[in-house]
Amino acid sequence: MKFIYCPICGGRLEEKYSYDEGGVPYCPIDDIMYFDTPKPCIIVAVVKDNKMLLMLRQNYTFKDSKVLVSGYVSNGEEVEETVLREVKEETGIIAKDPKYLGSYYLKAKEIVMLTFMAKYEAGEIISSEEVDWAGWTNIENAIDEMGEDTIGKSVVKMVLEEIKNVRN
Ligand SMILES: [Zn+2]
View 1 (cartoon, rainbow, N blue to C red):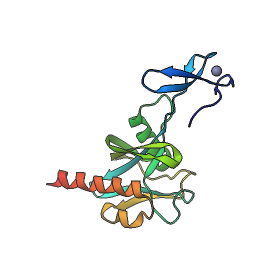
View 2 (cartoon, protein in one colour):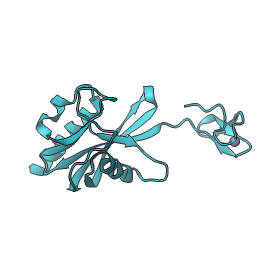
View 3 (cartoon, rainbow, N blue to C red):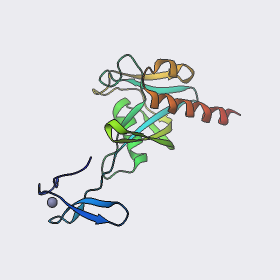
View 4 (cartoon, helix red, strand yellow):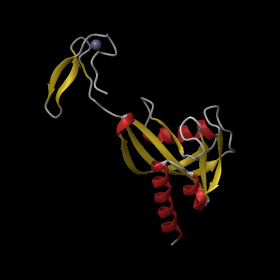
């Protein structure tokens, strides 16, 4: 998002030259440059016993499709913390060992999606109010149940590769 007004003081931003970025919106009162940065978001495949995958249904995102746990990175937290926090908040499950798998950029939403896998540590499923269903799905069947969630599917494919490597 290109900033026009300062979100702190409400003043109109000026253009300030930045060596790397060219002209950047700048507030001379607060002395802050507002770079045009994307919103970081995580998506995570939590795996139990190399066999079961933690999945959700959220009818407001993808109707009739299972999805992986996802959420926005909060300011002040490390991305690995976001992964574990979102899993806990949306499903009640405690996960561990988040492992980064790669990123995708979603132009329409200005989101940079950081993909992870993590391992089940403890806990029972208690779905939050944001979620219509949460549960374990056999990872071999997961992709068929994921409908339009293309990023989620590619994460599951990467996880299947990882699991094969562990087994071999
Ligand atoms: Zn300002």
